[in-house]
Length: 184
Image (cartoon, rainbow, N blue to C red; front, top):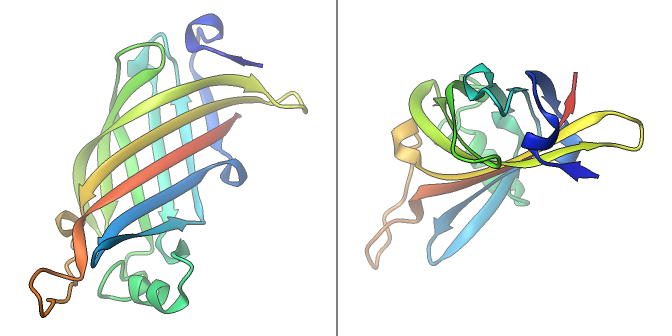
């Protein structure tokens, strides 16, 4: 059974992201279509008090070498110095600084997103999906967010000019994160 924040949450609760029930996806234009991919190795902690958002926080870390577009050659290129440079920058991170409540289900989580060692302040529009107990009695919480970043803002500059004009890879990257987290 899933319940809303206002019905059950009255105090700060700490949750660890359950990687087996969560996903980090991205898409970017390539020529005339979009390439989609995901990261398979990530972790994080959600400290959540829906009644007092200022007591809430989020930390999230992604292993850059876990990038997966289902194309081994492309994935190797994404891990190279042309893109994520995983040898020098093994993680992508987000650390929140503020949480602002708009409704029982909608929060803005602002913080520092760091990719390739370059940190930029971003605001994640987070939807709280509710609390639930799993069959083993563990309290869980669900969250989703989606944002678009310009990859060049984070040092992901590689591209190739096309004979017909334009470039091979688009600048805008849409990131979608869906998280199920278990209370600690």
